[in-house]
Length: 387
Image 1 (cartoon, rainbow, N blue to C red):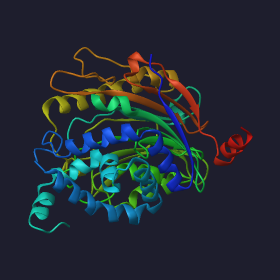
Image 2: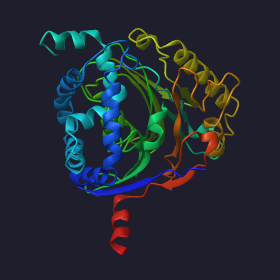
Image 3: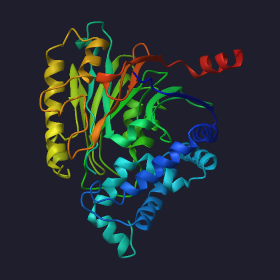
Image 4: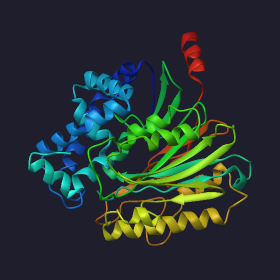
C-alpha cells in the first residue's frame, strides 16, 4: 500500500507558491517538461500538430486572462517560478494542461496564430455527488477518481493550503499544480471531470477556477466565481456545500469554453467524461473509440451502483464505488489498457458537513484511504505557533 504525500504551505500567495516550488522543484520540472511535450502531440490535441514555440505563444496569450481573473494565484505562480527556475508561462500551461489542449485542438486558434493574429483525449474521471437525503448518516458527499496518463501518478499530492488571507483548504492535486479537487474550511467542495471541447480559446484554465471557487464561503459564491471565468477549455464541475441559508446544496455544471448548463442535485448524481446535456454535446469534440467506450461504461456503472444504494450510502459505500470493476476492464477503477495509457492515479471523497476528506494514491483497488480534516486558518496558525 502506498500513502499519499502531504505538503503544508502557509503565508502570502507568493510564499505559498515558493514553498510548494522549493519542496518539489525537481518533480515540477519533470512534469512541466512532459506536459509541454504532450501539448505538441496530436494524440492529445485532437490531431493538431503544434510546435513548442506555438504552444508557448498561445500560452502567453492566456496569461492576461489569469492575471485579470485571479491575480493572487498568479502571484503564487511567481513564487513557484522563483523557487524552481521555471517560467510562469510554462507553469501555467502545466497546471491547465487538460484545458490547454482544448485550445491547441481548435484549428481556428492555431490558424489565427500562424496568420499572425491570435484572438486531448484520454483524461478520464468518475465523479459523484450524494445529497444528505440519499445517505445513511444524513451527510452529503462529493467524490471521484482522478484518472490520467500513467506517468502522472507518481506526482499525486495532497496540498494543505493555509493562506494568510482567505479560507484554509485541502486539495488533491499533483506537484506544481495549485489545485484540482478539494474542500475549504467553510465546507465548499469542488470536483471535476475533463470534457473535450471544440471551442478552446485563450482564457483561464480550470485549476485556477477551482482554487477561486475554494476561496468562497458558500456554494452560490463558488458558482458565481465559475460563471465569471473566461474559460479556455471544457470541464464538468461538481459543487457541494453550504448555501447562503446554511442548508447543503449541490450542483453539477457542464461548462464548455463558451457555454454552460447548471443541474441542481436533489438525491444523487454521477458524471464521467462525456456531456449529458444536448446543448453541450453540440460543441463536444469526438473521443477516440476506447475512451468513448470507457466514459459510457463508467457512467452506467456509477449510476447503477448509486441508484441501488440510495438511502444507505456511507463513505465506505463510496470507497467501494471507486474500487468498482467490471469484466471488460473499462471500469470506475481504471487500469492501463492496450493502446490506452490511462489509470486511476488516485481518488478523493469529501464530506462538507464535517469537513472530513478521504484520499488515496494510485489505483483505489490497491491502496487504502487516509483520513484528513480541513480546519480553519486561525486554528492552523495557532497550532504552528505552539510547535
